[in-house]
Image (cartoon, rainbow, N blue to C red; front, side):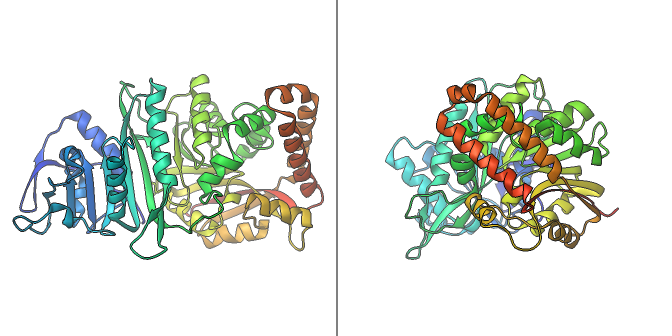
Length: 482
């Protein structure tokens, strides 16, 4: 999947006649919403799309116009789904034949669910499960839900429902074949860097990919997002980290390290920056306020993004300056030649496919665009057992600085430069540990003695790994060829 469709759209339609699309003028508001929605969907040229919900809007889109077949199902008749309509090249239906047979299992490339998802009764659960079976392996599922940001329950109820759906597994057609939904993107529907006049009801979008899953008999978490949200970065854990590293930061060194790292870049007002693994927003907020850049800040942890949005609001940072989204950096697509800078701090250690990720970065960057990454690395040669256990416990994928630079070069970057920032890491972690010890009682009262001991032990061990030379904090700079 190389790119998403262009945001500009020439025509819409409200009816079909033997595969022809009739243009209409739906009005500026509808056009804006439609552009927003379709700009985040994968290209489905020559593919099959199934739309449940507002067919008058979405079946008229450019995504549908380019598809080989589109099935649109009226949400009022979901159980019987008898109101399937025919669009481009869709085969005729014999008289008396059940329309539901037209939607075969594993036949759809993209399912768009533009209707409020509810799991209130068994009938609704059954239909939802059935509709997900229509999507082929590696196909996409998009949920569009209307929420009101001013009503916390509105957003939370939709989020809770979608979490239940996506954390579940679904049986395939073959014995012991199990599928799940891997997250690509969660965001409010509005193009980046635009200011909304009306913050009342608005759409939220969840985009997933259907993938095979192993049956998880021990009930542990199976996806990286589940691990992040439920183990490594619970909301309590994030608050603990922020209390040590400083407001809006969850990385060692906090703002001090960020200021030093950003000296490598030439940030100017109006530049577009992608912050990969933005945490709770400290780096993105600082770049926007200090340099006047426009930032898309993404993180796979929805807990991180929830808190990041809270911090941005508290610091009077608008969505037009920093646009936060829950997204998987390995699957999320952005327009080609779009960003001036891609920045990432202490995040890519979670990703094994670094070459593929850097190749995506290169596609997203403008010619001459800059990449700046800080990341945990390992020294060359043999490592202590303590370091091996530490890496295994957290599931990190760590390279040496030499391997990191070679990977950037293989991805096509030039002007590659690296610095060893381990001395800064040791200095700042020592200060942070001292700060933790000095406010021990306050920390215990806010959290617990168990939390205090666990955090201080973990961070002491991390500092030791750096002190003996196993762990290195590497800073990497590279440019996209002009």
